[in-house]
Image (tube, rainbow, N blue to C red; front, top):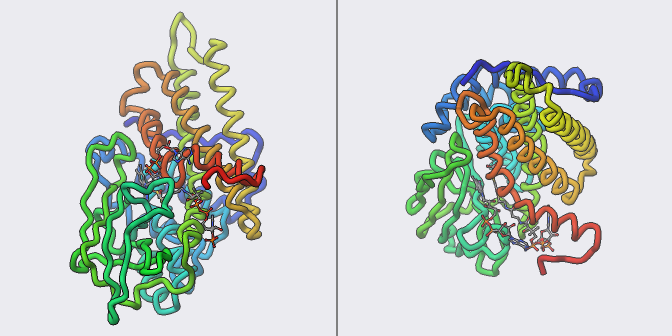
Length: 392
Ligand code: TGC
Ligand code: FAD
């Protein structure tokens, strides 16, 4: 891949609305991505191999549990800071952001929110430092958009819970040390369990052949009569609302992340349009190319403000599930469209690994599907504004 010359677009001076701490955090993450991610990411994707050498650095920049309090090893930052870190990571690659958002919002968050003090102390500091890596098992082969239909289940056997079932499409599962697993008890109530690698009957086969998120490892979680110690049950919340609460936090991070991918595509295409000559002129001088670029910066700018505002609401604990859905859906769709248009501006070069655009485009095909598909988020907005539930 060519050297990383990324310059962040900021057409309406959003920078001025950030605090000094926000800017410092963003710039630190950006520099880290330039130094540690950009030089290795293309090869990792080509080889479909998760670059595990970056885990330590991710922990060092505070990407594991940015908003988890410092007493549990987190960085104790606000939600805008969390978002900015996700933006910069996804500017590098959606798979890198995935690893960080799963660890923070889908593993550390439920332990922090729904776990007891013993569980928080036992797991959170080691997750924050990257000593432990986690994954989140909600989706099943027959229950993706409708996780409430899950069949993975556990029985109370006195000294332990006996867990059976399987989860599919689980980010980080092939190497995760622990899994937050959502399963039904004998009354059919959904509960969260912390399942640890090494427990008898627990396996994590890798899913191969992905054309998207190739630098992120994806796999299954299979439970064949796994004896889970009772102290590994998350006691403080149950029902589908428990995993959905985690998704609110992760979807929020994705909303920021998608802006990062869009900015990288736009920045690459803008630079290329000024350097590449056809018909004796830079292609950026043609009106058709300018239209594409002008529309891209307009959409990025709108997304930046929507998302920053969402961050402010989240800091005040006022961001609703429906607002987060709208923002995730809008931004991922925006980023996908920008990736496709940018790819065209680069002509044939756009399909090569010399530039990041095709990789972002393929990654975003997963991002538009996971954490609630494009359609599901539209229906969440529909329910919110009409009061009529399309899912029931
Ligand atoms: P519904 O009846 O609406 O709700 C069930 C219960 O949950 C409550 N609730 C929430 N609670 C907290 N936070 C939220 N955001 C909540 N949304 C709903 C709700 O009040 C109710 O509570 P109660 O007490 O009445 O039981 O549920 P439904 O079955 O109709 O489903 C609604 C729907 C379709 C919106 C939901 O199931 C959904 O969001 N589906 C999409 C599934 C999804 O997003 N899966 C993501 C899997 S994880 C993943 O993709 C990780 S990728 C990570 C990476 O690599 O970056
Ligand atoms: P389906 O639910 O079968 O949907 C198929 C199509 O039907 C979609 O277009 C959908 O929008 C549409 N559809 C479904 N229901 C409706 C409806 N009511 N109205 C209109 N249209 C509808 N899950 C985890 O639990 N943990 C993870 O870490 C994780 N990581 C992932 C990583 C990757 C790379 C991918 C691709 C997925 C991951 N997922 C994870 C799973 C992801 O959340 C699901 O793929 C997603 O929720 C959609 O489920 P599905 O694939 O079963 O599609």
